[in-house]
Length: 172
Image (tube, rainbow, N blue to C red; front, side, top):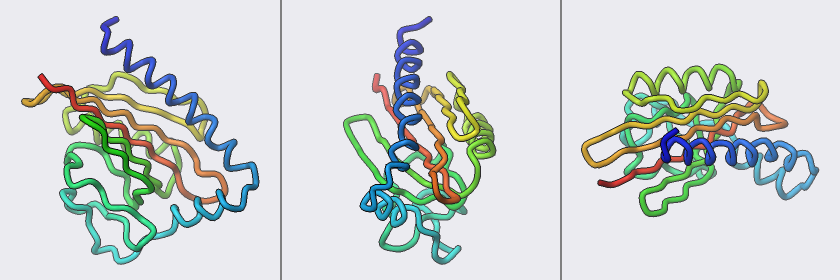
């Protein structure tokens, strides 16, 4: 097993472990957490809203949602009706938390198909339950290899799924 694949596997395993704990945190009954979750996962505004650089993909509307980073790549899957809950940019790494309506299974399949159609090579697929799944991909490009990890977790108490997106650019 290559060093990169081994690192990706360890990273994905760690992310799945953390992701599997998240639903338990929401059951604690903490009213502050419940309020924050509710505010972060509200519905959408005008269907004409589109994400910058993603023609035809509905973007979040309203003050309770963040915008996608301006450098977010066109070839990375975004679910229909997504909302951006958080964005973290580091050197060569972006981590986003989205929420989307639907079920984990269909979102998992749609993400896998969309990423492969954009030329990404799947390196990991894991489903631990009907409410938890993860995908990892790699793609070579002119400015270095890229990796993407997508995680899917049911957002307890509503009709949305939390979609984690981690992107990494390895420069030559």
